[in-house]
Image (tube, rainbow, N blue to C red; front, top):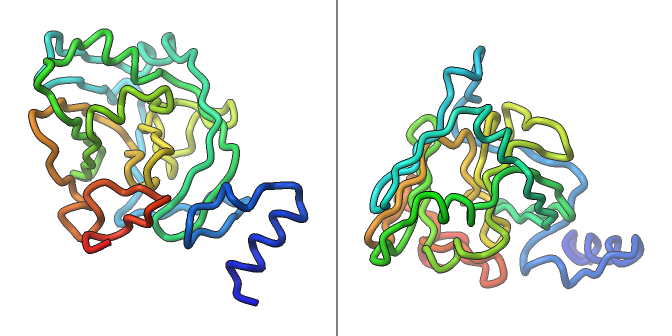
Length: 204
Protein backbone atom coordinates (compact mmCIF):
# COMPACT_ATOMS: atom_id res chain seq x y z
CA UNK A 1 0.00 0.00 0.00
CA UNK A 2 1.37 3.42 -0.97
CA UNK A 3 1.88 6.27 1.49
CA UNK A 4 -1.05 8.18 -0.04
CA UNK A 5 -3.40 5.18 0.21
CA UNK A 6 -2.36 4.60 3.81
CA UNK A 7 -2.89 8.26 4.63
CA UNK A 8 -6.42 8.19 3.20
CA UNK A 9 -7.22 5.02 5.14
CA UNK A 10 -6.01 6.66 8.34
CA UNK A 11 -8.24 9.63 7.62
CA UNK A 12 -11.25 7.37 7.25
CA UNK A 13 -10.43 5.65 10.55
CA UNK A 14 -10.40 9.08 12.22
CA UNK A 15 -13.85 9.88 10.88
CA UNK A 16 -12.83 12.15 7.98
CA UNK A 17 -14.05 11.72 4.44
CA UNK A 18 -11.02 10.90 2.27
CA UNK A 19 -12.83 12.64 -0.59
CA UNK A 20 -11.88 15.96 1.04
CA UNK A 21 -8.32 15.38 -0.21
CA UNK A 22 -7.65 16.52 -3.78
CA UNK A 23 -5.78 14.10 -6.04
CA UNK A 24 -2.13 13.60 -5.15
CA UNK A 25 -2.45 15.19 -1.70
CA UNK A 26 -1.86 13.77 1.78
CA UNK A 27 -3.32 15.01 5.05
CA UNK A 28 -1.24 16.42 7.89
CA UNK A 29 -2.10 17.87 11.28
CA UNK A 30 1.00 20.05 11.14
CA UNK A 31 1.24 23.41 9.37
CA UNK A 32 4.45 23.17 7.33
CA UNK A 33 6.34 26.36 6.57
CA UNK A 34 7.70 26.73 3.05
CA UNK A 35 9.24 29.84 1.53
CA UNK A 36 12.06 30.68 -0.82
CA UNK A 37 13.60 33.42 1.31
CA UNK A 38 13.66 34.62 4.89
CA UNK A 39 10.76 35.62 7.08
CA UNK A 40 9.55 39.22 7.09
CA UNK A 41 9.85 40.61 10.61
CA UNK A 42 8.27 43.85 11.78
CA UNK A 43 9.78 45.24 14.96
CA UNK A 44 7.10 47.91 14.88
CA UNK A 45 3.81 47.01 13.23
CA UNK A 46 3.27 50.73 12.59
CA UNK A 47 5.88 50.37 9.83
CA UNK A 48 3.50 48.09 7.91
CA UNK A 49 0.70 49.17 5.63
CA UNK A 50 -1.47 47.74 2.89
CA UNK A 51 -2.26 49.56 -0.34
CA UNK A 52 -5.20 48.80 -2.64
CA UNK A 53 -4.65 50.33 -6.06
CA UNK A 54 -4.80 49.92 -9.82
CA UNK A 55 -8.03 50.08 -11.80
CA UNK A 56 -10.28 51.19 -8.95
CA UNK A 57 -12.46 54.17 -8.18
CA UNK A 58 -10.92 54.53 -4.73
CA UNK A 59 -7.34 53.75 -3.75
CA UNK A 60 -7.18 52.50 -0.17
CA UNK A 61 -4.49 52.52 2.49
CA UNK A 62 -4.73 50.47 5.66
CA UNK A 63 -2.54 50.39 8.72
CA UNK A 64 -2.53 47.31 10.91
CA UNK A 65 -4.96 48.79 13.45
CA UNK A 66 -7.31 49.79 10.63
CA UNK A 67 -7.61 46.14 9.64
CA UNK A 68 -7.86 44.94 13.23
CA UNK A 69 -10.96 47.10 13.63
CA UNK A 70 -12.48 45.52 10.52
CA UNK A 71 -11.44 41.93 11.29
CA UNK A 72 -14.87 40.45 11.96
CA UNK A 73 -15.05 37.80 9.23
CA UNK A 74 -14.29 34.13 9.89
CA UNK A 75 -13.23 31.48 7.40
CA UNK A 76 -12.92 27.77 8.24
CA UNK A 77 -11.46 25.85 5.32
CA UNK A 78 -9.23 23.03 4.12
CA UNK A 79 -5.97 24.24 2.61
CA UNK A 80 -3.83 22.47 0.03
CA UNK A 81 -0.17 23.12 -0.70
CA UNK A 82 1.36 22.52 -4.11
CA UNK A 83 4.01 20.41 -2.34
CA UNK A 84 1.20 17.89 -1.70
CA UNK A 85 0.22 18.40 1.95
CA UNK A 86 -3.31 19.34 2.97
CA UNK A 87 -4.61 20.53 6.32
CA UNK A 88 -8.28 20.37 7.25
CA UNK A 89 -10.50 22.84 9.08
CA UNK A 90 -8.06 25.72 9.40
CA UNK A 91 -9.59 28.69 11.22
CA UNK A 92 -8.89 32.25 10.08
CA UNK A 93 -10.26 35.65 11.02
CA UNK A 94 -9.80 38.92 9.20
CA UNK A 95 -11.40 41.12 6.56
CA UNK A 96 -13.52 39.56 3.85
CA UNK A 97 -12.29 40.44 0.37
CA UNK A 98 -15.86 41.47 -0.43
CA UNK A 99 -15.31 44.48 1.84
CA UNK A 100 -12.27 45.47 -0.20
CA UNK A 101 -14.34 45.21 -3.37
CA UNK A 102 -17.05 47.35 -1.83
CA UNK A 103 -14.67 50.05 -0.60
CA UNK A 104 -12.37 50.18 -3.64
CA UNK A 105 -15.04 49.83 -6.37
CA UNK A 106 -12.85 48.24 -9.05
CA UNK A 107 -13.55 49.21 -12.63
CA UNK A 108 -15.75 46.71 -14.53
CA UNK A 109 -12.90 46.08 -16.97
CA UNK A 110 -10.54 44.87 -14.21
CA UNK A 111 -10.14 41.16 -14.92
CA UNK A 112 -7.72 40.04 -12.21
CA UNK A 113 -5.88 41.02 -9.04
CA UNK A 114 -2.14 40.88 -8.43
CA UNK A 115 -1.34 40.34 -4.77
CA UNK A 116 1.99 41.81 -3.64
CA UNK A 117 3.93 40.46 -0.68
CA UNK A 118 7.31 41.22 0.82
CA UNK A 119 10.53 40.26 -1.00
CA UNK A 120 8.91 41.06 -4.36
CA UNK A 121 6.59 38.06 -4.32
CA UNK A 122 3.38 38.40 -6.31
CA UNK A 123 0.60 36.11 -7.39
CA UNK A 124 -2.42 36.52 -9.64
CA UNK A 125 -6.07 35.51 -9.21
CA UNK A 126 -8.95 36.20 -11.64
CA UNK A 127 -11.62 38.61 -10.47
CA UNK A 128 -14.43 36.09 -10.98
CA UNK A 129 -12.88 33.89 -8.28
CA UNK A 130 -12.42 36.74 -5.84
CA UNK A 131 -16.12 37.38 -5.57
CA UNK A 132 -16.27 34.13 -3.60
CA UNK A 133 -17.06 34.19 0.12
CA UNK A 134 -13.85 32.20 0.65
CA UNK A 135 -11.47 35.10 0.12
CA UNK A 136 -10.05 36.76 3.20
CA UNK A 137 -7.32 39.13 4.34
CA UNK A 138 -6.39 37.15 7.44
CA UNK A 139 -4.90 38.68 10.58
CA UNK A 140 -5.58 35.77 12.93
CA UNK A 141 -5.07 32.02 12.76
CA UNK A 142 -6.85 29.92 15.40
CA UNK A 143 -7.77 33.20 17.12
CA UNK A 144 -4.15 34.28 17.58
CA UNK A 145 -2.29 36.89 15.50
CA UNK A 146 -0.48 35.25 12.61
CA UNK A 147 2.98 33.93 13.35
CA UNK A 148 5.69 35.70 11.32
CA UNK A 149 6.43 32.54 9.31
CA UNK A 150 2.75 32.36 8.34
CA UNK A 151 2.52 35.94 7.13
CA UNK A 152 2.16 38.39 10.05
CA UNK A 153 0.81 41.07 9.99
CA UNK A 154 -1.60 39.94 7.24
CA UNK A 155 -1.84 37.36 4.51
CA UNK A 156 -4.38 36.75 1.82
CA UNK A 157 -6.17 33.41 2.23
CA UNK A 158 -7.92 31.77 -0.70
CA UNK A 159 -8.34 28.02 -0.09
CA UNK A 160 -9.96 27.32 -3.46
CA UNK A 161 -6.50 27.34 -5.04
CA UNK A 162 -3.13 25.89 -4.03
CA UNK A 163 -1.80 27.74 -1.04
CA UNK A 164 1.00 29.59 -2.83
CA UNK A 165 -1.87 31.79 -4.05
CA UNK A 166 -2.46 32.88 -0.42
CA UNK A 167 0.16 35.62 -0.31
CA UNK A 168 2.13 36.03 2.93
CA UNK A 169 3.23 39.43 4.33
CA UNK A 170 0.67 41.15 2.15
CA UNK A 171 1.53 44.73 1.15
CA UNK A 172 -0.43 45.45 -2.01
CA UNK A 173 -3.65 44.50 -3.79
CA UNK A 174 -3.52 45.64 -7.42
CA UNK A 175 -6.52 45.44 -9.73
CA UNK A 176 -5.31 44.80 -13.28
CA UNK A 177 -6.96 44.79 -16.71
CA UNK A 178 -5.92 41.28 -17.70
CA UNK A 179 -4.67 38.22 -15.86
CA UNK A 180 -0.87 38.17 -15.71
CA UNK A 181 1.59 35.75 -14.11
CA UNK A 182 3.02 36.61 -10.72
CA UNK A 183 6.41 35.59 -9.31
CA UNK A 184 5.74 31.88 -8.90
CA UNK A 185 3.78 31.65 -12.12
CA UNK A 186 6.71 33.17 -14.03
CA UNK A 187 8.95 30.58 -12.40
CA UNK A 188 7.11 27.46 -13.50
CA UNK A 189 3.96 27.23 -11.40
CA UNK A 190 0.54 26.97 -13.00
CA UNK A 191 -1.21 30.19 -13.99
CA UNK A 192 -4.37 29.20 -12.07
CA UNK A 193 -3.57 26.46 -9.54
CA UNK A 194 -6.70 24.37 -8.99
CA UNK A 195 -5.91 21.51 -6.54
CA UNK A 196 -8.73 19.33 -7.82
CA UNK A 197 -7.27 19.43 -11.34
CA UNK A 198 -3.67 19.08 -10.03
CA UNK A 199 -2.64 22.32 -11.73
CA UNK A 200 0.73 22.45 -10.01
CA UNK A 201 3.10 23.46 -12.79
CA UNK A 202 2.85 25.29 -16.08
CA UNK A 203 2.43 22.13 -18.18
CA UNK A 204 -0.30 20.58 -16.03
